[in-house]
Length: 323
Image (cartoon, rainbow, N blue to C red; front, side, top):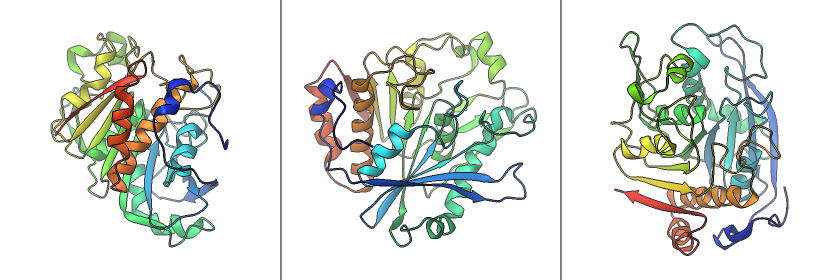
């Protein structure tokens, strides 16, 4: 992790952040479960100093990389959030291309149900995780938990935030709301199903039909205004904002101008899967999400200050909110 901003951060340097501290990462933490095809591997990234630290559960996307769709990915977010006061816990979900498991059964494509269950399992075993990581014991505030997810990980996050899935093939309903999670960050999220899915989308995610109507947990939805995804939807970039518009408040929506699905490179440094790699776009996502999380879990004025700054930086993005 650098001690200074990237030289290409551009106008994003004007979005305020609190001072950073050095961080450390510890992995793998291995949690065995008899009802899971493979032990659950975790990575923890934490600040080297500080107590009463809030927790962020970070769910990776699917992507096309061999390693970034695992606990090895999303370093640009995990280290940044940790450097500014959070303990970030990253699982490797069963959908990861980096592990060897049997193909998921029909109805659980991409092990999407297990992905949500992984987050619940982490919270159920948070004491064990805390005790396993050297230098972490006694430093967590377990009452302050956030979830963040990108792409397929956004759907994982939405499920524990209160969304549900109604399988279009058989009408079965899946819910995994967890009241221990107080706030969410939804990055390049999935939208409405039905006629909004493309033909290819219905093939890729035949189980998918989101219902956001009960997703009451506060969340920040982050979208790129160039994130057009014809492999999933017949609509444009607005599809990724559906979980903001179709869920009850309080919610905030951050549009990143010029960003595609990678949001400037959230999944990894210099990653081939990132179509829009940009230190400025990435820094905007880092700083705005940090501000939101700090206000939600630390109770400070970071979000108000960041929104005010962004209003003066129209080339970076816009924010709208609903209560």
